[in-house]
Image 1 (cartoon, rainbow, N blue to C red):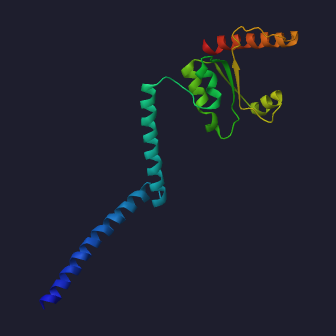
Image 2: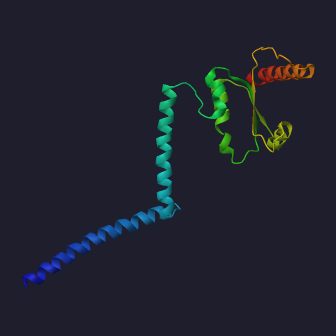
Image 3: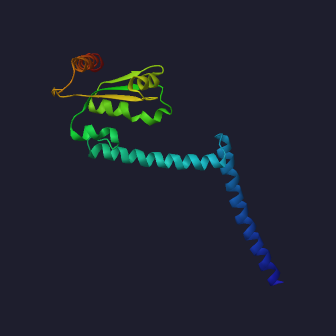
Length: 173
């Protein structure tokens, strides 16, 4: 008879633990259902949220420690010390996240930025002889002589310089 009661006591303890676990499981699922999520979405968003907070902490730490510095190939001029004098950015780039860092860097480095409306990427591409161009960066020549440049090239350089000065006045004021 003692043996039978031990088995019953074990079954009762097992059922109690399982009842608590199932109750917690039910409460969790009712809670995420009230938030309009599935279990899969909940865990994916938790992972994204953790990644976002980690990257935000890294960004804040880097911002306190270092000066603005670019890492991609277009930033070689910034690292060498000659900043662009003007940046033209097409708004029709898809996905926009590709160039989302450019306005922030222009603001940090105090470089005038012009956002071009419409189908600017295809228009800039036609001018440059390619299919599309999403960004156009004007570098300051530093008053260097053009060497064997023709009069037409010198005129073009003067016009671009005057346009850049005009854009600087309008954008930075």
